[in-house]
Amino acid sequence: MALFMWTRECIHKSTLFFAAAAVAAMTACTAVPATAPATSGSVPASTPESERPTTAPPSASPSPDAGLRPLGWGPEQRDQDAASAAVAAMSVEEKAGQVLMPVYAGTDPEAQAAIIERFHLAGSIIMGDNVPLDARGQADTAAMTAVNARLAQAAKADGRPWPGLIGVDQEGGFVARLGAPLTEWPTALSYGAAGNVPLTKDAGRALAAEIGSLGFTVDFAPVADVTIGPADPTVGARSMSGSPDAAGALAVAFSQGMQESGVLPAVKHFPGHGSVTVDSHQDLPVQPAGIAELEARDWKPFRAAIAAGVPMVMTGHIAVPALEPGVPASLSGPTYAALRGMGFKGVAVTDALNMGAVQKQYPGGSAATAALAAGADLLLMPTDVGQAHAAIVSAVAAGTLPAARLDEAANRVATMMTWRGRIASPPGAAPASAAPGSGGDISARVSAAAVTVLSGHCGAPIVQGSLRIAGGSAQDRARFEAAAAKAGLGTGAGPLVSLIGYAGRPVEGDIAVALDAPWPLQDSSAPVKIALYGRTPGAFDALVAVLAGTAPAPGKLPAAVGSHPAGTGCP
Image (tube, rainbow, N blue to C red; front, side, top):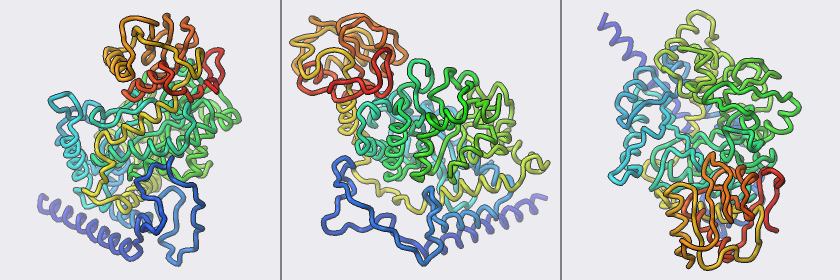
């Protein structure tokens, strides 16, 4: 029996090997450069988007090779053909693994690597507790790169010809699994306040370049949700804007910047998490809006992203009675039908299946099979990946999950990663701009463009000589003091500046400064109200420059704050 199993495994791996060889030959025959060579007068690729001249794109000409036909979401026909050939050689167990992307505990990747190999998994997501730290408590980038390399190696152990999915939630603001020495970014609401699409693209490119250099292939960002303001407990400053059109344009720009650095984006959380009032990490929110209202508000950014060819859309754990009452959107057939009805042909990935909104209602591996049957292609963070894998295999055997649905999902994931593998830079070829911390200047420019004065002086010093600091964290106060000292402002006397952190409450004092979402400013009694949307060193430099009157406050409120409508700010 052991000899039979060994022989069967060898035959199967040989089949995958020859399928991979055929794939390599097919793509080699039709290969084209990922980027065109520079010509006289062209702008270097390293030039920030916001500094590049605007030129009309070259007109497309019909390709004589059908394999070069774009599929509308990144990959070309040759990527799909190659993936289909490889997936066709897989067992049901291997296909089931291709649609699963689990989490693990701790900084040692060996157990996770073994699970990836055992279940033929698509890859792994990295959370905060998986990030190795150095003696200073900062992210150990060399160790992180080694962890990702080990997980990527495990993902290819069964002979598949495409890279593994090594993902992370690195949005900026307080959702950032990787800290210093990587660049610290302000909240996404900064982009809406700045209203600068090219700068947003620069930020997406810079953020992705840094994490891509560590071996990440996927970043579950940006958030395309349209926030409704203080009643939105989950998304808040993770949203780019309260305007559907602005949220769409900015999410597209950020995504495009990420892709230029070789990292796949996933816009989230369809059908829109910014307009519900319950946190899906804890329970199931219900979206009461009808289809017309969803189309006019929540779905607009996703339509824009789909039209721009985004490769992945994440579905959220939100019940939408207008689509399917009582069922999380991530597990709802009508929700995926609505998404596909917008023209989306890429990979639909669920939000984490271990969240309260799903876990309470779908125990064991049932969430995985329900999501897959509904139309999901990639299942993120199942509570128990072994149970989820077994449930998928059993459901296919029992006929309760059509084999064709599993094939479709596995093919989409494989197509995306075949494309990613073809266009990615070879290992060690990352530019100097991808070094950890290299995006600091762009991060500071975002904050300088975003800082918003809701009430108070515009174009004149708000503080002279010295100021007092209250609120915020110890790090916030230290950074503020350092920025003030650089600008020649003393601390310990003068007007009281009260800092409001994440989920903070209204404050008193002379000047109220919101470091995250600006909602607490509406009930703050301070006569001067400033929205900073971040707590990075660059953000505090921007704040001090406005207080000292050495720089304007160009930002505009991206969403209403009490009596201050969206668009409020200095002229």
